Image (tube, rainbow, N blue to C red; front, top):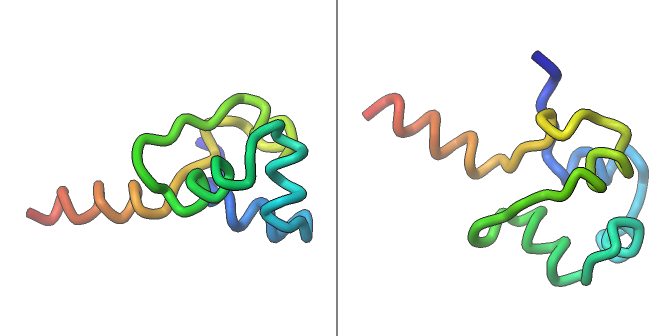
Length: 74
């Protein structure tokens, strides 16, 4: 199973701003910010994995992981 990374972690590794990352992914800054902040239902395109050089299934959103962890505890 591949390691898991948040979009913020991947962006920081590249030393990119959110604006630069959004341009590389071909999305608006607002869209990228929503992805990184996990607002609403988010679908990351395979382009994100390609830009960051990681498998698509290694990208996750921290809030989703925290939510599923808390669900298990209930």
